[in-house]
Image 1 (tube, rainbow over the protein chains, first blue to last red):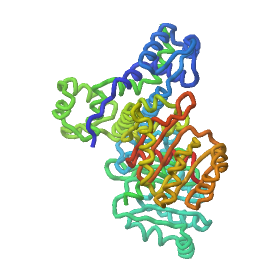
Image 2 (spheres, helix red, strand yellow):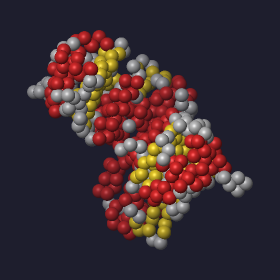
Image 3 (tube, one colour):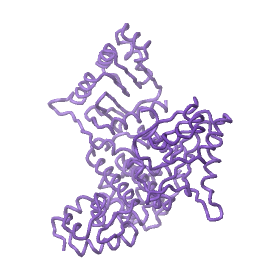
Image 4 (cartoon, each protein chain N blue to C red):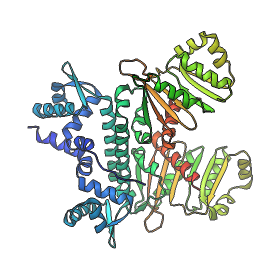
Length: 261
Length: 267
């Protein structure tokens, strides 16, 4: 698959110096003179000026009159670096969520776009509220007109929740294990179920494969749950987010898993 | 001297990328294990470093919970795998830009939204063709050749070029081209309508859909089922017909499709 990856010297050149990174982040907002850079960053004149020369030498910036401008490509490089930084921050911020959990069913694309989840909140159960994760999701589903979900296991309340959405003319699309089909779908009120199926508002995809991911996509929020490395579902943690990016991320993941079935 | 507090803030802000990216040992170890779990000997051979150095690096990564040792195999944890995947993305983005540096560096990139500029790794298989002094229309001819086999084309057209239109109309009339979507701005649309030949063959053609947008279009993008091509404007505002970026891989096409949909298509 891959021949040889390495962090090239350009990446190192930028990553090595916080001052250079800071200068680029400032110039990205707008072109500035040395003095303006010193004032906004509080870094000494000598450090700023020596790093400006190095950046100019490496063709990241150029000087016109007394202002320094970022070259368009430098901005792209910088953004790529900052995305990478954000991905590390996200791994660290939700350390317990990823750690010792199974992420094999997340596609490479989903993993590469993991920063789309950066506005998420990690919901954890507490000894005083051991159903906090389930109840949070339930609340979101109840507020939503439509639902797309990957349910790797059956919760006795799901048929009811799904039935409610269908009753209100909402749309449901599910990915579930094959052996769950009867228990899940036949528990929904028959008249509602048949009408919705006929109108194309209830779509169910079943798979003989084991699903190792829990995903719900409501109108406003998405939530993600993972399995622990020992194979059991982690009922105590979910990542929940209402940002547009996370919604798109979740939809991509849903489509990807559907496509792989 | 920069004062201590400023220094501390700066360190804090960038310490994570510095930690991973500036140590050749740490980054190579992570990337080596991204391919597959490895034992010490395999790592030693791959990195060509003594055991002591490698063990030191492994210990550091283990403490950060990026890797774990199971029996004699070192492998990435899920956190480490997430990190490695994003590291590979960074490297691929970088090399994909570097592969076509001249193309990107010569042009005004304001027409390409930031989100897509951050996903340059999708373009790693794309290459650019340049016209030369001995063949001034090399880029244009390549373009015409490319579109001549397409049954479907979606084009963001920021220029009024009768030369381009003439070829496109020919393809439509020969019925090789069965569907054409054109995204243009008001000014270009006005010029098309003012030309009776273009009006008849494009605007009044059932096979053609024209979308008019308000945006100032700064890119010439062609998106077809089997290829995509991109030409841009110079930084001074002039259209550059001498360099064309062409790609055919699945990733490149999905990048182009996303770009097309941002400007064109049904809203």
